[in-house]
Length: 404
Image (cartoon, rainbow, N blue to C red; front, side, top):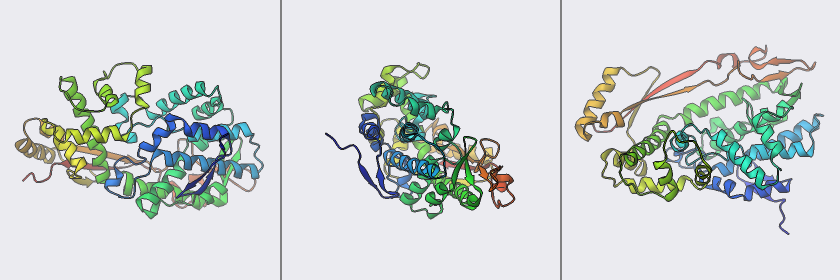
């Protein structure tokens, strides 16, 4: 008999326990094991060399924080059954199961408008069939259909265990200390009021620190101008490859990646699409990019070499959109060097927008000593919350180096 009550040594949270056998079985499933080969942060390791962690790491960490949060709520008198605990842990464990190669960057390129959450749900339903319905409650919680709302809020909200793990984990692996939130302190302040997740009022500054840490991580790491262009290059590479294949070109790639390069964009998803998607990972894409560095197509070869050799285009970041005349001049010089049409492909203005805290959508609420609740941004003790609920936009212009 296999001992399924494993203990996993995690560099971020320490020892992670598996209190239910079904958790072990799900982790062993090929769909979940694929996450070992899906980067958590795309090509961020080209900017922050330590950022080589995977979706597999993150899913386990989020599951551990879910267990910790549920144990905290139980100690505060919230009744949670073993089945509910199991369902919540399964839901957060599988919340990223639908991520494709390099996560968000190539999401729309491979399966068009199929967001990873939609794919996650489809894969969870498929696994539920295989496990004889043991994931039914997890799926209800994941979709927000379970009658006790706080379970879904722990899975997906402005203060969920998903965010708590990825901020702390990404901070650890990138070495960017600003994202190192105190997850234990925040979880210890969690409570439930009217079946909604709330925070004990004395934890207000830990929550504000969490929100600002997330804001700093986005601008310093996820939306770093070089990280933005690296992600954009991946999208451009796959887009160019799909266009060339549709025009009749033959590009070397793995069987599954070739399948998606040929797939019609308006084609409804099939069982074969889903099966092939679960066999794709970062390795398929990197292997193809290495092949395409020698492509006869000048633009594709340029884009692929930029990634493989880390010779990124030049980038300029601004808080205002760039003038059309300035962009047109960069395009003209690019076409003079790389040929007609290259300007449209190799000169791009990207936008990155962040709303640090959305006070109008599922706001974080504080539980006062008398049992009443107040919104975080309306608390008389808040310092920052009312100032970080406005969107901030940055513009990044990308163009080839050495144009002059």
